[in-house]
Image (cartoon, rainbow, N blue to C red):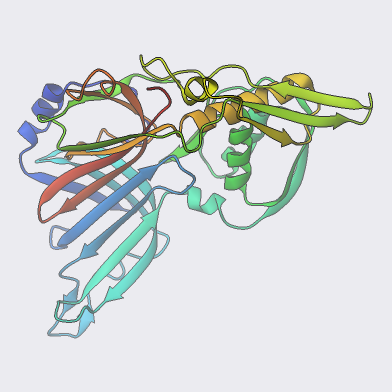
Amino acid sequence: MALDLDTSSFTFDDLAKKYSDFYAPYYDIKVDGTKLSDDIALDNLRVDTTIDGTADSFSFRVANAYDITKNEFQWLSTFTLGKAIDIGLGYLDKFTPVFTGQITSVVVDFPEGGAPGLVVRGMDISYLMMKGTKSRSWNKKKYSEVVEEIAKTYGFKTNVDATTTVFPALSQSQINDYHFIQNLANLVNYDFFVVGKNLYFRKPLTAMTAVMTLEMGKTLRSLMIDHNLAEQITGVTVRAWDNKELKVIEGKSASVTKLGSNSKTGKDILGSKGDFIEHMYTNVTSVEEAKSYADAILNRRAMKMVSGSGECIGIPEIRAGRYIKLSGVGKTFDQPYYITGATHIFDDEGYTTRFQLGGNAV
């Protein structure tokens, strides 16, 4: 089963049935398509998923890699740098894919007072997009068309929402492909991230079906939510100079698109205390482009107003890029949240999922 960003919604009971009441957590790992031998004992398996500008990653330790009688490490040929790796997590014999990528690091570990082992780490293939810098240009293209073109050179399946503006010229100047696309995403407030072999460049607050609802004291072990005005502003004004018309181009931000049923954004709260407007000077070519950029900046900042983290029993369906609902924590906090990061931890204590949250209304 290939890894992608599922849009299904589940109840906790659905998943308990699927995973035999979460009995006997286990993993399913394939290297270059071959399942790991049962002789290989892993501990401290960790998978990190994120939408925040870094590659998804994994790490684990092969506890029995060192053959004391031969003074040699076993399975070095299995964990060769650059090999493809797929990781599924679940319970008993039911697994859900959580990672697809490559092995990027193999560490020989001789800890003081402990048994030698191999520490294997890797990243999804977006790490290849972060290598090298490029300079090139496109004529009469939309951002979305440029993203499609770049993504296909890496073999990604693309999930790209079309942008509207056709630019006479677009240039990439001494920057790697990943951060170039990330910059384009910031200009229009798009989400940009990679899931396995799928690249997403999408409008914000889309595909908002919550993966599930977690209830405090029952299915949610711990939770922290922070409402914070530190990075909030009331508006954004973007200006540029029109060399043809010899006049200033100006665009102002409009409103914040809210996530959830709470009524106030950072803009609303600060608005009662005055105007706190951020001014940007850039090379936009039209009022429409300036307004779009101003809205993008305001809405991106707005999503920093609400942040949080939580922990629950290991649920592989929880991953960055999905939404999740909380309950049992009061009306203000019983809201949908954007999952900005999720970490799956498989160790001696079992299988745990930790996640980071974002929102923009209180």
